[in-house]
Amino acid sequence: MLSSLLDGLGILGTSPEMLALFVGFGLVVGVLFGFFGMGGSFLVTPALLMLDYPAPVAVGSGMAFVFGTAVIATLKHHDLGQVDYKLGVIMITGTTIGIEAGRASVYYLESLGLAGGIISVAYVVLLGGVGAMVTRDALKGDGGGSVDHEAADQDLSEYEIPDIAKRIQRTVRIPPMVTLRGDVRVSAWVITAVAFATGLLSGFLGVGGGFIRMPAMIYAIGVPVPVAVGTDLFEIVFSGGLGSYLYGQGGGVNLGIVAPLLFGSALGARIGSAATAVVDADGIKIYFGGMLLIGAVAVGIGEVGSYLGNPTLELLGLVLVIGAAVVVAFAILYTTIASLRETRRRATTAAD
Amino acid sequence: MPGLEVPTWDPETAVLIGTILLEAIVLYVGYGGLERLFGPYLMRILVGGEASAQ
Image 1 (cartoon, rainbow over the protein chains, first blue to last red):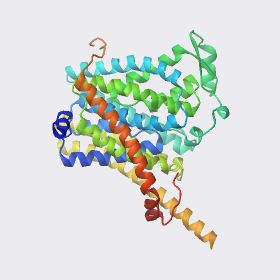
Image 2: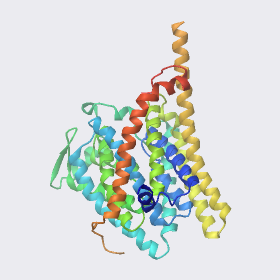
Image 3: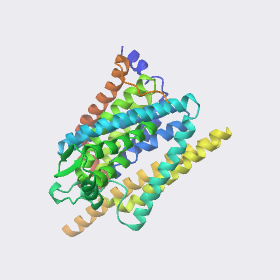
Image 4: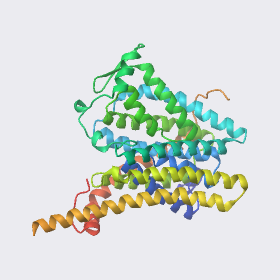
């Protein structure tokens, strides 16, 4: 009974080696997600593309993985009272339409035989762009590019709305106006536009879209950082769930990929999240930016290898994208343990 | 481009997505329990004392 269920869901169709690879990769992705608050999930789809999974399976399974990860993270943020459900419901409406438009584009491009190539190119641009932005911010030392853990722990009353958000709130006053947590008053149309744009990206690339939606919620809508984090995750549960369902109907969700990835990432996210209390994220952010840039190069190399029919180049691309993530995850773990041991040593010396 | 698709009820896909949802909840609760049970022991092995990582 159990084996027939697992077989029907695709688990038994995955070899033990691949299951182990996915659990390990999930662990690495989870550490990155837990530590930086973003970024792990959009390494999954390109890795699956390089493993020769069809584009709808790579994107659909990537989205199902994002859905599972968001469920786990939302449970945690709900406990902390950091979810604005009114904002979440409006965001869900705009994102749903955006996701469907993105998903329809993937299937249309797949029917033309162009999906794999165009999605890979979009990833090169995306990873390269975000990677360059994070690296630049890390070099400047202003801490931009990912979730600010200190800001995320601030009280809502201490939060100051960014100037650009204030300007948008004053300029765009098309009714209906909505009042959000932290006394933010903004047009529902601004929220819908932000939601549609990020939904389109999610549906096309199979990513949660948090790394675009988070800054958009903070800078375009003016939502306090802790509420943006919690609401974003709440919204991803719905958008990711719906996207996964639609991809699943077309056979695009492979549980043999998603289940082991989630198994590893749920543990990794706990480790990464705990590490934020010990290690300064800014010190490691430059590696994160470098990892994204290497990811962009790796996807490019893999795509050239695929175009030329050169398996060595395809393998090199896969090794680079997984290797870069592994190196950064180990850097986080190593720094965390070293910091803890140093703290312990100082405490022991002081006690003596 | 194909028209926008309205989701239709598909029991097999619903079981698939429900399984992922269930796995996520089980992992959240399960890993939370394991962390409480073995966290201090693991910290003693890694750090040599119960230094707090939280």
